[in-house]
Length: 153
Image (cartoon, helix red, strand yellow):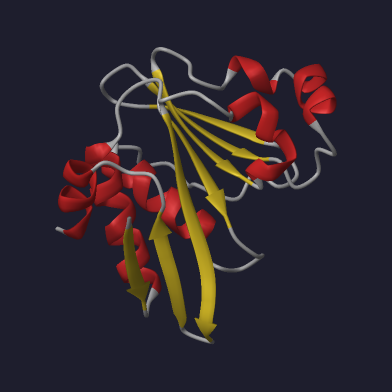
């Protein structure tokens, strides 16, 4: 496990850029944490690290944002905040975004679709926690030693 402390949006964006270099197609990353703790900022950093230049915003109202990467793959940013459970997620088509061969997927509020995610070795977890107004603890829960080494920078 790797735990880092972010004291700025710039740090979290940079961390997202490093994360983009670690992620492989078909991986899904669950982003757990309260509102305003940096999940979307990290997602924006991942998008920039993948070469995506368009605006990256929270998909809270759209549930899913799809971005085309310059290498031909996709970056999916999902927000399950407004999805009550796995059945509603499947009805919405969320399962098509999970573990897709040509995509990297980040999921905010993953606890709402936990059964759709559990048990797959391509799943990774990141937990965010407010420490202070301008400090966030970001923990990479089940990442390999090599992935953690690369994320440290």
